[in-house]
Amino acid sequence: MTETLDNRKRWLALMVLCLGVLMIVLDTTIVNVALPSIRTDLGFTETSLVWVVNAYMLTFGGFLLLGGRLGDLYGHRKLFLIGLVLFTVASLACGLANSQVLLVAARAVQGLGGAVVSAVSLSLIMNLFTEPADRAKAMGVYGFVCAGGGSIGVLLGGLLTSSLSWHWIFLVNLPIGVAVYALCVALLPNARGQAHGEKLDVAGAVTVTLSLMLAVYGVVNGNEAGWGSTQTLGLLGAAVVLLAAFIATEARVAHPLMPLGLFRLRSVSVANVVGVLWAAAMFAWFFISALYMQLVLNYTPMQIGLAFLPANIIMAVFSLGLSARLVMRFGIRKPLAAGLWLAA
Image (cartoon, rainbow, N blue to C red; front, top):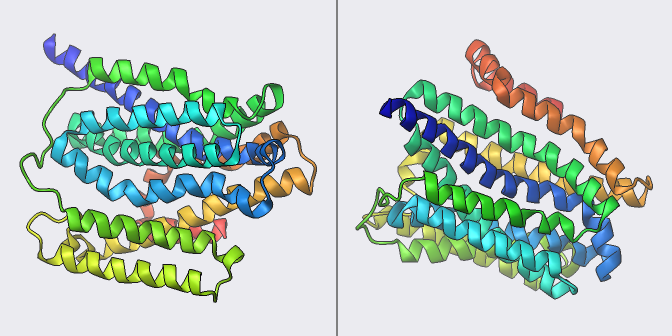
């Protein structure tokens, strides 16, 4: 009986974790649908509007590695709750924003909270499900939520922006955040981090975070400053130098932020490169397509949400098991190559 209750509690905990991740996934798609409305209301230019998205991406990408390591050191549950609070409070600030500066700053804090939640949620799931069969099912559910969240985001973004205002695309996170926090406190064990007692690789954390943030800033501001300008080249050059310093640091510290030995595995290296390129393509597609549909095709926010829906539904359906079946039958390389070619 105890084992049954424990098993039930694990799956409930998975649902709660997925709900927290859903909030992060929602935020990446729901904003794109509302961008034209935000632009009109707060007076953004086409160039400055990109920072509503990029401020989030800047901190999200910059703090992923550090967030994961802090979870290992101080406990995944604790870091998940901290990230959740940051994200929820920042969502409130975004929803109440009445200026460009406040919205962009709040989006940056949202990205920081989202990075921590995303970095530790997978570790929590892996710790909850140790049996291979259960872990595979749990990861399938997680993948479905990540893909299905895109579908919910584009529809919800269109609905809220059309019927209420763009402010509500952020305020909708508040009840979700409060509910997830309360349920996580009740369901997740408050365990020590698996690397408890080890020292934080401060030099590695500082160099990789600064490198990622400078690189992202240099790229997203390249059109405005000029790709051959001193500013852009200086930022990208500094990012490369810091990345080299990070790699040198990781090669010699006892407890590295990112063990370099992982990249000796060809599958890990290829998967990371493909993941970075695919994420870049997806975010660019969402951002540009939303503006094109509303400003050129004169779509309403709700029509934009419906236009994005087919792609998100297909991704959600594949994540429920169809992708796994294709991989089991044909291996990883062929389905991956075919998917990328179809997307292109």
